[in-house]
Amino acid sequence: MSELRIAVVGAGLMGADHIIRIQKRIVGAKVTAVVEPDEGRAKAALENAPEANWYPNIEAAISAKAMDAVLIATPGQFHEPVLVPAIEAGLPILCEKPLTPDAISSRAIVDLEVAKGKQLIQVGFMRRFDQGYINLRELIASGKQGELLGLHCAHRNPAVPDTYHNDMLIFDSVVHEIDVVRFLTDSPIKSIEVKHMKRNKLSPEKLNEPILCLLETEDGVLATVEMNVSVQFGYQVKTEAVFQKGIAEIGRTAGMNTFFDGQIATEEHMSFKTRFAAAYDTQIQRWVDATKLGKIDGPSAWDGYLAAAAVEAGVEALRSGNKVQVSYTEKPSLYNA
Ligand SMILES: NC(=O)c1ccc[n+]([C@@H]2O[C@H](COP(=O)([O-])OP(=O)(O)OC[C@H]3O[C@@H](n4cnc5c(N)ncnc54)[C@H](O)[C@@H]3O)[C@@H](O)[C@H]2O)c1
Image (cartoon, rainbow, N blue to C red):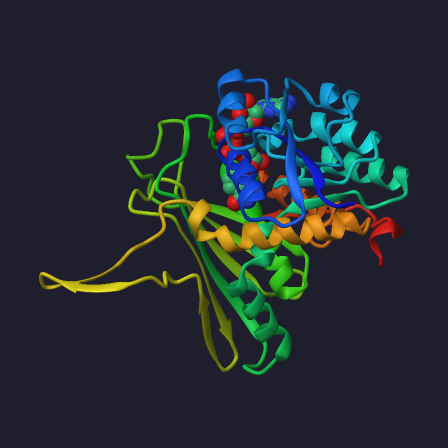
């Protein structure tokens, strides 16, 4: 196959960014279908993918045989209705996180994939492709600084769109830490507790945040996660790791420092699009390369399910104020390789 023909489903913030990425930076792939119910967004997206056709839904694109693979960038609660027909059609899929917002629907997707007998789905937990997280994972595994004892994570957005609601603090945002804490420690999340900081009066009325989550892994590592979506000043994702013999930090802004007018300043990111640009590029390139070989090369549907199970406990913890234990169903053998 010379060029992988990709249908991008959902041409909002993330989908539009992925279309530009595939067209401008990814080798061996092109966007041949934009699946988007909103005509204005579809037309804007097509300007960056002139060879692509517009389809109002995934079923129409499948009937037209418009693609070899699907990239899903609809909001998390609308992943399942796109995943099901794409899996049934046997198409390889990169699905933005979360796989789905809860454990039952994620397990149903896993079961559908198992019934097909092949791993078709890669989940867009792109932090696994970020060099900082890769380096930290290697350091933890090396044992050079002794055992990892705990992690302090912060995920801060300047603001969020109107469509963002309170549960999304967990299923859309903390889900990144839920996945990456397991990636870093190789240990599943055992329990989640959520505390509220003093409410930021600049947050939209429907949100009660910032929150502080406590994720405990089965190996006993405790991760604190500050989730803050109204921090105003910039977009910041950082992690500090506490070892027996020292501390490691990733995610500190590494730009130009200026020393002007009696002040030292460094530019901070304003969006995930720049903070994780290199990680998104690597994620999509490796997915394209693997897809051509009939494989995936990144987090699987099973990883998506494990995160969804922990998310479900996290949403309950957010609503109840209780510490909630995570329960997982049995792993199908398809994911043992
Ligand atoms: N990995 C990351 O860092 C990151 C960052 C932002 C968003 N995301 C993820 O990307 C996904 C999209 O988020 P967003 O912020 O771009 O959302 P968005 O609301 O900006 O855009 C979603 C688009 O999907 C379209 N849509 C809805 N249902 C559809 C359907 N059934 N078929 C086709 N199109 C449909 C909407 O019309 C909209 O244009 C979410 O899963 C989100 O969690 C990931």
